[in-house]
Length: 336
Image (tube, helix red, strand yellow):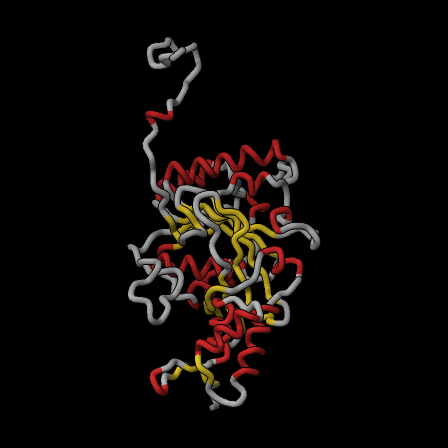
C-alpha cells in the first residue's frame, strides 16, 4: 500500500527531511582528492615528519592564488587551476609565530597579510569556542588549520572517549559545511607500530570517523629527506595516489611527485622506499653499457614486477635522458 507522506500531519517537535527535496551538490576541492571544501580533513604523522611544513606550503600557495602542486612538464593544462588568493586561519599550540611559523611562511612565498591567527594568549581556544566561528565569518577564510588536534579539545576532554570527541568533531564539521571552508586538523600518531594505519591516530577512532579525508605523512626509510603523503580514508572521491616531497636544510621544501608506497608500508617500515630503490638499481644495470630502447626497458621492468609509475620516478631521480636515434625512443644515463 502506497503511503503519501506529504499529506500526513507532522508529529509535534519532529522534523523530517524528504530526500526528494534535497538538491544534489558537487564537492568543491581545495586539493583533489585530498582536501575538500565544506568538510574536515585530518593530517597525521609522527613528530618531525614534516606535517606542519607541508601544510604551511599549501597555505602559502592559497594566499597567492597559485596551484598547490607544481605543474608537470609536458602537461597541456595543470590538473589543478589557480584561483583568487584567499584568507587562511592557522592556529598552532606548538610553534612560535615569530621565530618558526612566519619564517616558514616567508620561505614558502606566502602573502602573510592573508594568514590570520586568533589571539588565545589569555583564553585557550577550543573547537567549541565561539571565537572560531566569529573568526571564520569575519575573515571569510577558506582554510582553517588547528595544529595539533589535542591542543584544541579543552582541558576537561578525554581524547580517548568517543562520547566526548563526537560533539567536538560534529561542531567543526558543521562549521566547515556552514561556511564552505576546509578545516584541517593536524594530529600525532600513537606508538602502536604494528597496527594498521587507520588505528595509528592519537585518541578515539571517532576523530577519523568524522573526517571525510584522512592523510598520513611519513618518512621513507633509508631516504630521510623524502617524506610521503598517503591517503588512508577518502569518503568523497577515490583515494589519491601517494605523493612525496623532499625536505632538507640546503634546498628546503620540494614536491617530488607520485610515490609507489602504501600507508601501512610507510608506517610499519616494510619496504619503505624499497620499490623505488629496486627500480633505480634495475635502470643502472640495464643502462650500464649504453642506451637501450624504451620498449625493451618497459617490457623487462614489467616482467620484474616494477610498476610503470615507479619506473618513471626512478628515471627522473637518476636523471636518465630520453633520446630518439633512428626514430625509436631510447633511455641513456646522463653521464653517457
